[in-house]
Length: 305
Image (cartoon, rainbow, N blue to C red; front, side, top):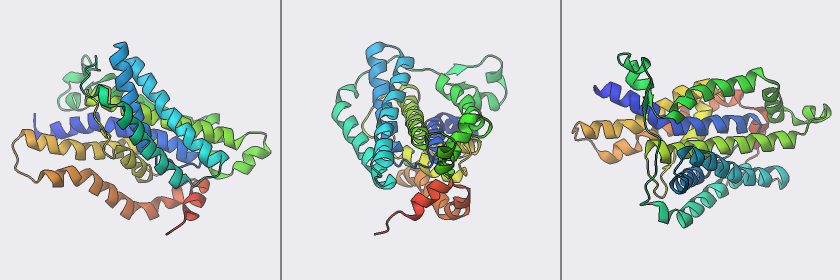
């Protein structure tokens, strides 16, 4: 296989966990709540998914458990920022460190465990399409589900009544309250749903992509997902391209190594994060006008020290 095809196929497989987290964060931020603890939600989802899959022998049960773990951590974040009026940025960082601590404490015994992991499934007919078949149609089931998740969440946000309520909570919650809806409840549901999707992303990483668990395995993917939401202008469909861009950066290093290229490994490992920084530098101000009004107020009022 050519280098380009290898990287493209790796972009889809490696970008799927980021895509799930970015889709979840899009829902949360559309409701006016930013969650910098997305990395922590991915970590607890990865460990819980792997641990439950190891104990039950069923990776699907592991994914459901991973979603629940990510949602639970996000619910704590929602309680702090919605009920206790804590800083969204500070609370998110606390969730990150809490996720790191929990997975470090309970994950040691699963480092050497093996599971019945998800395996790539070549879709009949489609996988034989030259080039495109290898890139899109030879992946694990969670990757295929992500193909449906992005348009489904776009429809939810922009074509459904629930989406109108979510966006209303992120723009003008007082208007929703005037019509008898609870902005707090809607924000709770959005943040928990966002954390659950991040947990699915973590579970995909451990039970389908890496087929293993090790401490800190998300390696900053949650932060990349948060940056990706800005890159995509809070649009779930645009998040797909962004996730695969970062996935390609992650896939480039092993693809070059497999071909014996003598390049600086540290530079290759840093590439996804350099791209993230460039995205934030060049696009954050341009895309700020597309952010929900409540989120803009949150970022504008964030203390600068």
